[in-house]
Each structure stands twice: as structure tokens, then as C-alpha cells.
Length: 374
Length: 134
Image (tube, rainbow over all chains, first blue to last red; front, side, top):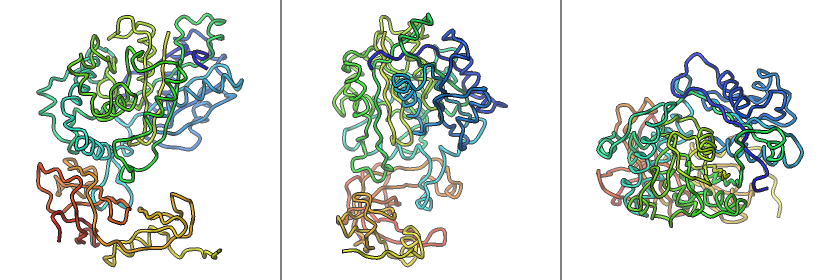
């Protein structure tokens, strides 16, 4: 299936605080812009896949959105893997198109935990609430502590990841946080849940993003201006709650990338730019190592070899990622991957031919990988 | 060998909690495959059998990881900051979330042996674990 499907259009809303708008409204704006960017008519869309918002979970959300858009999708609904859903839905759309189930799919994500409820991120964990076990960040902190114990100090590499994202975010006029980060600022950043600092943690944001998926053949017939081929995808679900993972520092991310690389016929050395889900810095560190960019525990070597900024060893999160552009769970990373392949990023990697994108959900419970090309 | 399973009067989670309220830390063990686990659930997660028994933990465990909260996401803990939450592995295998007693700042306690010690909090005995033995 390598290259058989393309991303034909991308759309997004403003990011940050977007009060007075429902997630339905945000989704429609992103879809309207994605369809306009592809240069197609609404009538061409026959599939709608959407991630349920974290700010308010409701049944049949996909049909509520379809109704609001007067769509009667041949194929569609909600697919829930938390933040991994976006790439997984792009993969499902590509497979559905290949199987003749639909022809033009919209994949959309909207969320408004900044002005709405952020309960999903701060909730207490069931029977363990009386120990004070609460929040998503604490789960990542539990993993980060174990990682540092097993593989050594992580401050330098986490700081480098955050500084790169913030630098790229500062260059992106659509970014929610445009304040560049220095190492001193990082080191003085207060603990949220130790060992994670405020600047290790993503933003909480309102906003939406959407992409149009169709076959490469249809994109040619329709004369799509800037189709970006989907070279590979994969997923892997760790599933266990953090306390139950036999090895806290191993997830299914590696298997997800292996599937995607095999489909694309590529290896990590072929990747020119990466958009890696940075809900927390530790996630980027563990994802890149699991993907095979370095052996486990050695990502820190990348810092001496040029690091993660444009011009460096592996330019990362070139629109600012979740740390700087928007904390929205994931689809914005695919949009930036598309812009890199089109050559239109505000932090463009010159001559970039292949981009890898990761999405993940929960506390490294789910993982999905996408490889985009030319 | 077949055994009739009657509808339980309470869920496994409720039975586990009732034992804790009685200052006993229990876990489940599968009679088909010997797997031992927490948190309480209705089927063995390894072989999916519903034929399991309760066992009482020895109270010996090892620290898997821990964090220190500087934010009270749960407002009940606003007066407790900073406080720790840990994951420990019981000698019998199951893992659980708990708090560590006598944790010193700056000390790496991963892999250290800990011992069960119930402490009263929120009107219940909470199964916490003490560093440096009883």
C-alpha cells in the first residue's frame, strides 16, 4: 500500500484559548479549511472519522458531527485510542479507500480542555485515589524516574527536546506559546510531579485540525495541488496501566514503527524530519529510541551530534509540537509533517524527503506511527 | 474438573477493599495457571480463567518507581505537598500503587526492599510501605 493513499488537504483553527466554541464548531472549521486546501467540493467527501474530545466524552460523536455537516458518510465514526487515534484513523481511512469502502475521507480532531473541562488530565485513578495517585503527568513522571534509574540522567536530553520545540514554536505565528526556552529557564522550571518540570509538560489547548485522505490515483484525477503520499503506518498498544508494566521503559512504540518502516521500505536513517508526540519530554526520548534512531539510553548522543533543531541531527517538532504550538492531542503533528513534505513549514528542513510522525495516547498506552514522503 | 460459580455477593474490588479495611493485604491467584495479580478483577488476565482464589500478601515488596507531587490535582492533598506516590512489586508478584514511609529527599530508592505498614488516613487503614525494614 506504500504511497497508494495521500493526504490531499489540511486545515486547522486557531490554537490556545478559543472560548465560546463547541468542539463541533471547531471540527467544522478545520474540515472546511482542509477541504478548501485540497481544492475539492464538500460533495466529494464520503467518509468522516473523528476523535472524541477529551473535554467531553459522548456517545455517537461521529454522527453528531456528520449531522452538523450534513454528511451521510459511507464510512465513519469515532475511533478511540486517545492521542493515537488520529494517525490510526488516517491509516483506517487509507485501508478503507483501498478496500473500496469509500473514496475521500475527512479525519478530524477538536478539543477544548482549556476553556472547557481538563478533568481527563487531572483525574484521580480509581481505587488508588487515597494514595494521592492522580493526573496524567504523574504516570509519565513514574516512567521518567525509572528510565533515569536504568539509563542515567535525562535532564540534558529532555532540556534539548523542550528547547528545540520552543524555538520552532517561536517561529510559528500560529503557536500558542511563542516564548523560546533557555537551559537556565528549563533548570529553574518548577516541579509539577517530580521528576517532571513545568517545561517538560505540554500545553492545555483548545482547537481543531483535519486532513483529507484519498487515493493517489484520485488525487491525480482531481488535480490536487500538493498531495503528500502516505508511505507507511503502524500501531501498537501497550494497554497495561503504568504500575502493571513489567518494564516501565518499554512500550509498543517500537513495534508500531517497525510496521510503518517495513511498509514504507525505509529505515530511521532515511528520515529527514520527525514530528514526535511530545505530551511530555520523556515521551519523545522513549519514542525516538524505540523507533531505532539510537540504541536505548543513547539519545543523549544526538545532542553532541547537532541535536533536534533545524540544521541538527534530527530536526524535531518543527511547528513547536505539543510543548509550544498546541497541546491538542496529536493531529497537528501530521499537519506539520504535510507542510514539511510540501516545503511550507515556518521551520522548514531544506530538502526534507521523508517525515515520520508519532501519535500516542493515555500514558503510553497506545501508539501510532505515520511516514510521509514525496 | 468443573465448578459451579455462583453470582458473587460483592465484586472482587469490594472484597479486596474489605480485607484492607481489616488490615490485610490480599491479592488473587489463578487456580488454572498460578498467575498472581492486582488490582482485583474477575478473570485471570493471563489465561482468562474465572477460577481463582484470594491469598494474603507477606508484606515484603520492592520499589519499582516513585514520584513526588508538587501539585494537588486532588484537592484533598493540598495540605500534604510535597508527597510521594510509589509503585511496588510484592514478593508474590503483584504490583500496586502506594506511598513510601521515610523517603528522604534526593535518595534513589528504586529496587530497595520495603515492608507493609498500615497507616490511618481518610478514615481507613491505608497499605503503605516502609523503607529500611520494620
